Amino acid sequence: MKRSVLLGLFVTASMLASSSFAADLCDTNLKAIENAKSQYQGSDIEAKVEASVQQAKAHQALNTKEGTEKCISETTQTIQEIQKVSKDGKSS
Image 1 (cartoon, rainbow, N blue to C red):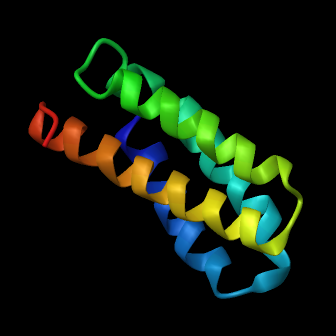
Image 2: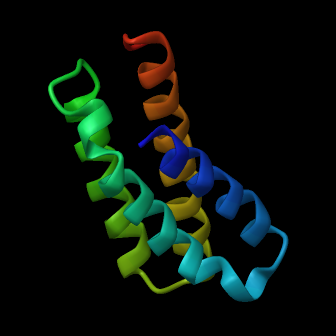
């Protein structure tokens, strides 16, 4: 599972370089978070991750450049938080 989260971040960084992939990047990040569910489920950050996902989906639903950028930012931060928890075994 750790590899899938790392892969998600790599994909995130790669796609940020190209604006044509921005909308797909939000979806990719949301899928990476879903795939990492076993890493944060039952942890201190589970509620925070779920709230973040809902917020990201709301930004995505705006179908604007700003909404897409906010979705990407929100999901990238969430992926990083999941990585911290899986590395450290606790929430920061």
